[in-house]
Image (cartoon, rainbow, N blue to C red; front, side, top):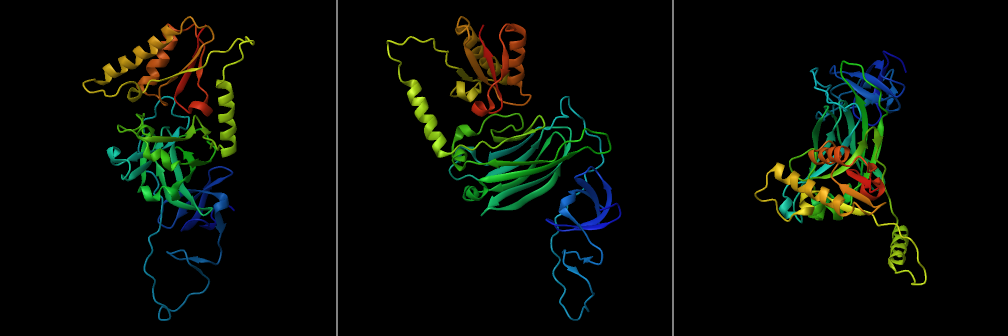
Length: 354
């Protein structure tokens, strides 16, 4: 394939002229309407004699109009090239942070409400994406578009009846900047498994950094690293439960062993600390959360080796920033690290008492 070749797309409607190669995997194709589209090279095929019609039906020889009926024009999916305008880049935004966010239309009626899904782009890059779900071991594309930097884009609305067919989702991503140099990012192909039962639980929808309303957020890419699907078989779960049961049994009195202190978990989300926040403004809520934070450390300050995990939410939220600031200024003597992703996911920090 070379510049000037005419190509058509294998897995989408359309085609055009190859204008340039963005890298070894992506080619920029100018379609008949003048829009330029980034496409994976292996998703294109070179055409010579073929005449690509508006509805993507190839034919080698013309057919008299009297011999056939003209088909009704089909709606063609096209991704419009982003408008050329300046976007304000934020500090730290050159690392890709992408998520899928699910919001109930009526959170007070979870048993019957419909849901909306958004793609969150928390980075300084444009994202060309393809959102898919798997049905009968085959993937179905549900939305293909470009989302602008540091914003989110509505993908679709769905009902509870559609949850089963959306249990397995996948996002394909290509990141780029417009009219300015940028660091090349690897194309991403991330699969996510949705648990239908999660959508029936009120506490699954939490305060987050992207929406004013509570949302169920699935990380797709975090600091340029794709999220990995964590699958646990029933056998593994049963073995883990048996091991936990044995661990909880008291040791024989004749055996004296030094036991490591159990990790203390403290969820600082306000809905986990208070039944209601009526009459409290944002400042009062944050002060209450920090009071719990300080009180927990004070109560365990004499327990050498004690590990405490504070769950504060991910991203650059107010609570997370405040917690890290307090640790840096008032508790420099304690080692600080991100809590285990396997156990706590994103948005938790662990300290060790010395």
